[in-house]
Length: 426
Ligand code: PMP
Image (cartoon, rainbow, N blue to C red; front, side):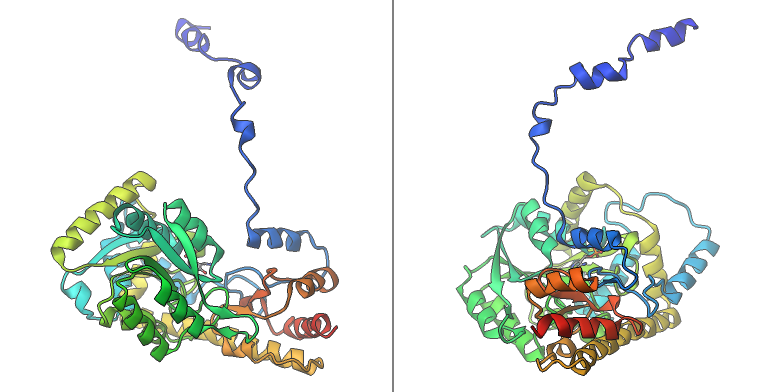
């Protein structure tokens, strides 16, 4: 062994001694085990099930009619074009791809919107919708001057509560859903918002509410905007399904645009996981509406400060795909057609499921399945029936009765319909 090597090995501690005596694990072994994620727990059970008939209705990702993941043609085309450009892999910067940010904001607020034109949008690329909500929550928990209380709908996407709490906000709920009527509880919602303290934070799902699939209509959004204004609430819009909800991206932005028109203070959290199928690319945007360029500059300086200490620079590829699609009229139009087709397939599966349950002999009313929109349906099936669906029929869904409609296809929908009837008719 030469002299230099010997000098280094002198400082290496044998592995066994590191684990057995030198590492004080006393505190570490007291770390409690975190509860399993609701969705991934069911997914585990599905994966272990050996039945050929098993059906997975939990996963929040689009599947085609063969039950396979789907990569959009326009995404493939965008990737081809990007490859031809031979771009470098330099850091994007703390706010991400600035052109992507602008295109994304315009997608939500509409081309030529007054906010971007007048420097009234502080924009930051995010790690998809989850990252966007987290950035917005960290910003608000640090700077929102009044009540650091954020209200979310009951029920809501489970991760909202964890994200907002981890960011330092206190989370409370407002009524949203009437279990008996299997419908939106708009009166309850208004009542609860009226009772909130002024100047607190409220989170809305912009379209395709997860998990219920019920959204307020246009008039109701206007009423909500008036109420939020009256009470000076700060609104976070979670916009994870634009285009994917009704198949019409403009229509799915109605809620956000009504609030923007009414000059409500808000942050908009966007995701391209569902509508572009870019789940694993982790691409989204967090946007704050401001009063003007001076406020925008300050807000963006803080957004940079937040991302710098979280992950520094965001990933490049997903932003380039979205940028390529949104900045090219022809490609964008083709993409919108693809989104429409995905939404239409899900809508047709809703009708097939409802009809299948009725055809199997159910006398119950299943119209809510087709009245809801988007990827999820709150079926109204109770916990005990859900357990039977899993055990006796190998149909996997959440205990709340929520299904992901995209897990249905022309081959399994009849089987699922019959199973739903059997577990709800006893
Ligand atoms: N918000 C809602 C309401 C969602 O349902 C989801 C995905 N299930 C997200 C945000 C975040 O998804 P992602 O981080 O993949 O964009």
